Image (cartoon, rainbow, N blue to C red):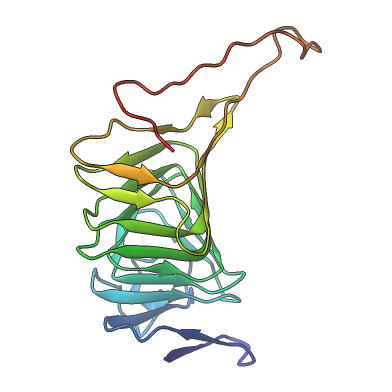
Length: 220
């Protein structure tokens, strides 16, 4: 395994034996991942990079323009944010027990089966672009749109059960975009529906709720 040494030199974090180019977020000069000085070594990652986000960095990573990685790990208690219209594109694994959040898009676009492990994820849009499948062992909260490209598949609960929630608030509801080809979502997931009071202070009004699914087969 590779080991990441955190700033206080007291905590180590073991990551899998990845084969890409190692990139560790340092945040030495700010939160912008397009600045080479914020990385160790001093180079902006590419789509073939294995990125690790430690905790206790000088500045936390804030993804405000598109960023691609082969593997992406967020060390426990560390955080990373994605801001619309930015996309974080990962082609292999997203792991760690840290937190990934924001108004941007998380895209999984691997050519082999991909796994999300342990991470707490709260993003606006979540895009699956992998015909070999994505297995979710993470905790995902979507506030915008869940998209599956043609023939892509998502196992919502994985082998070490994760959770997938389509979030609903007073300002909007998360949704699943139109599914084409053999695209499929298996496993259980939650769909919330925010219901406002009919009159101020009156939450007793009758509501009729029906399936919002159209033109698709629902089974399970």
